[in-house]
Image (cartoon, rainbow over all chains, first blue to last red; front, top):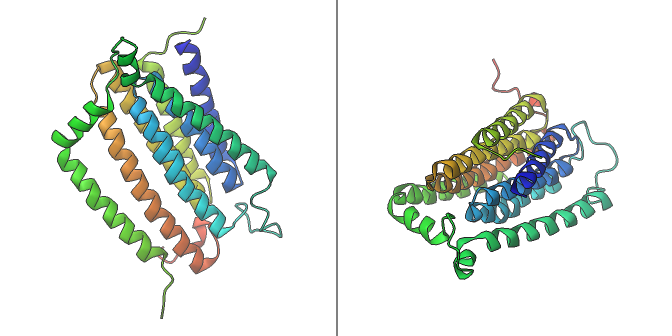
Length: 171
Length: 103
């Protein structure tokens, strides 16, 4: 079962990534990349890392990719070539349906990850080799605390930088 | 019957994904797609960490992936802000159009 899932998800991840690179429409590129992330999140669940799978879905697919979608829609550049008349037909039925299907896949996967997470396993009376979120949190705030704090500075710098760069210049 | 996935399978998959991302960076002429290709590369690296974690029985890889995702978020925010600024400047996303720093 796990072997079959591995091959399916590996295939989906590779196919979706190839299409991200091959796609001329940035909207579809972003949506296909979310599909690729969904497949990778599935692989993380298979690799006994449900915490990473969950943050992959919530932060990567849910936050970072939405940021990309915002910019694609904001800039409104349909294709790589100089845009023609169809500037405002960004959200046609195709991307919309694709997005809805993707959202469903991500929700199903999130539940799968939660169900494979160790607290569920402990309740079922079979503590697996899966690292719990609690263990990760303890490690994060003991051995890795310096990196964690440095990350907060990085995020602050990125936030200020993004605001300064994207701000409209007033002369 | 399909072979049970081993560490080698995961590493090969990760290498394939990384190559796809690299190809995207070099082949595409759209700043947003280039940023997306970088995300593909980052994810290939994450897969390596998680796979190595599982087969070595440690969990430091998961923590590193956590940091990689944080850095990816920062990179995406700043990168997209630069894309917006560039687009405002030239009304195009083609990286070949931005040649002011070329000599």
